Amino acid sequence: MLKRFAALICLTLGLGVSQASLADVIYTGGWFGGNKAVGGYDTVSYFTEGKPVEGKDQFTYEWSGAKWQFSSQTNLDKFKKDPRKYAPQYGGHCSWAVAAKDTLVEGNPKYWKIVDDKLYLNYDKSVQDTWLTNIPGFIAKADKNWPDLNK
Image (cartoon, rainbow, N blue to C red; front, side, top):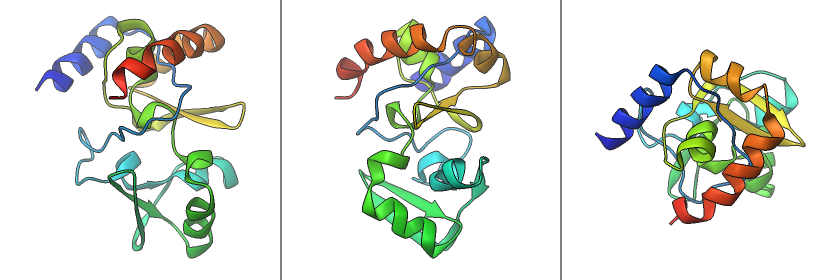
């Protein structure tokens, strides 16, 4: 319930999102649920295809307390080899909330950006638009806040 309230605050304020540190606390709830990381989207596809692609049940891997789904065996194998390379920063939580509000809010796999070979998710388009105005600043602030939130 608290996460929903925080998400509503993000949406109401229409502020940006930033994510820079990878989380061990993986977000699996919200709009997508089912203990699926990144809402069941293939995190490797952001890097290899430049877009989110839905994962398939037959290509599932459990890591860091969440189920990760992939669109192919090749992408699953890439993730298994180096999960931290492909997992979204801040465990897939709303980067802006980590940076600006020092709280955890769901990230949406449809609002994303790769910065310095790291995947960042945003809550929605308006949040992402704000985040894009100062990516380095939001990342620096989120990196500072993340250790206390990642407990």
